Amino acid sequence: MNPGRIALVTGRPNSGKTAYLSALLQRAQRLGKSTGGVLSHGLWIHGDKRGFEVEIVASGEKHVLAGTDLQGTDTLRYGRFIFAAPVFERAVEALQESTGKEVVVVDEYGPLEQRDAGLWPGIAHLLRHHDGCLLISVRPALVHELVQRIRTGGQAP
Image (spheres, one colour):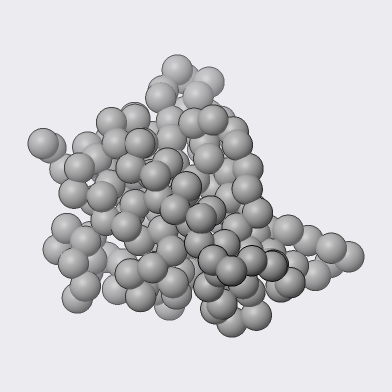
């Protein structure tokens, strides 16, 4: 399998990475390209980010991924947010199903993925098996580590 083309979209939190990736996806779709992956939209209430909603690109389905007051027994807390593990599982499945699409987005590689959790299993799968265009959003502080993981086919540096 040929290694795919990988581009990192980097920026601080709330700097427009998701909007940029969404625009790139729309352009690719207008050009007739097959698309896949996941987008993570912030959930805002009165100017305060209260969580995240994950969008599965291929189907358009959306699920609440994280919140400050998310309830449930199958959750993971990181910082001020509580994450729904089953939604991460669905997002990872969507990333794995995106193998072979012409343009795939991963929004985003963050602290959970740095610890091999969150979307990481799906990202690692794409790094090993995807040969199309892969666009990954990442915060500036994590770029170097992600580049090292890309170079080693998904292994920790």
